[in-house]
Image (cartoon, rainbow, N blue to C red; front, side, top):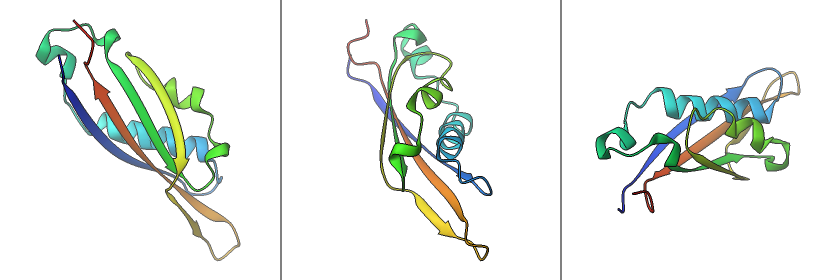
Length: 111
């Protein structure tokens, strides 16, 4: 079966400059604003879905991929963090962190 979809989301850390929190919020945004039940439509076990979460932030090394993966309620999850997103300077010298998430959900190889 070759079935795939991509969901997108964005998240921010307004005050704490927490890249992991911004990444988690981006994943939550992608998951909660979409209501596509890909596994249910094709009658497969949700636990067998393959999910690749690609997270873009300005400082990829500041994201804890395990905390991002823990957001997913099911599926086989792999998280990669790449350069992207935005660090938006604030007048006080801090930054607002904006993370972007692309969730690649696949049933490839699932019977």
